[in-house]
Amino acid sequence: MYNQSLLEDQEGMVTSNVGFHTNNFSCGWTHPQLAFQQLKSLNNPSSMGEDLACHLNGSQLGTSSIQRASAILWPWGEMGEGLGSKRQTGENNLAIAAMKMKKVKARRKVREPRFCFKTMSDVDVLDDGYKWRKYGQKVVKNTQHPRSYYRCTQDNCRVKKRVERLAEDPRMVITTYEGRHIHSPWHDVDDSNASSQLDFIW
DNA sequence: CGGTTTTGACCAGCGC
DNA sequence: GCGCTGGTCAAAACCG
Image 1 (cartoon, rainbow, N blue to C red):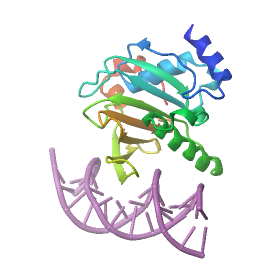
Image 2 (image 1 turned 90 degrees about the vertical axis):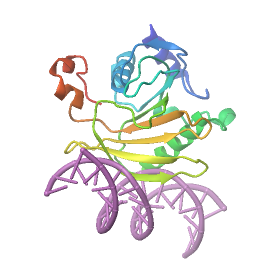
Image 3 (image 1 turned 45 degrees about the horizontal axis):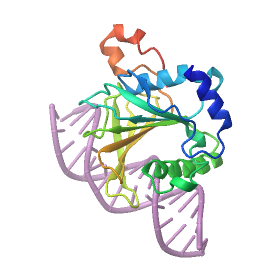
Image 4 (image 1 turned 180 degrees about the horizontal axis):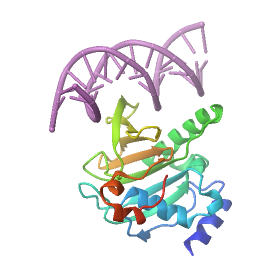
């Protein structure tokens, strides 16, 4: 059901502001990777490799996990298409950044898949099941909060993520993932039973 | 002592 | 060409 609406809107979207809408789509994701898994299952298998963004609304974030969330989903590559009327929003600051990155990546041949989560949280770094090492921090223009850069600690895994707080609402944390893990989450290593539930790589 | 974080320097892309 | 900006590097500091 959602799959249908996603695809129809995705194809039809040219000028809408934040892509296709599945407002208040409820789900019981407990981790960002599960959210992504859900996202992938909703999407057309042929487009599973596309960059995707996941905007989590009203999530209750404990110290380490998202208990529940509603979501607006949109393909990352289309986020910049209809910025016109919403240029002032935090969502579109993100979209503008995405558009800029798209340009950069278009020049460089390799374009890693990306998607982002926007969550309300006191903590900057969500426990998404993977281990990350911080490799940089940067103050981004027009924001009072620095952006942090992380890399997956696993050998040969080149996944990165950026973490920043929304200027308009510092309670909101934007986590952007880039690339796909070539290994299972650390939680799986600790608990082999969990691997059957989190059996995917992104 | 090994892994992680911090932070200033450096680099590449973009706009003017 | 130049300045601005975002992303990355790498040495030093920090921590368990």
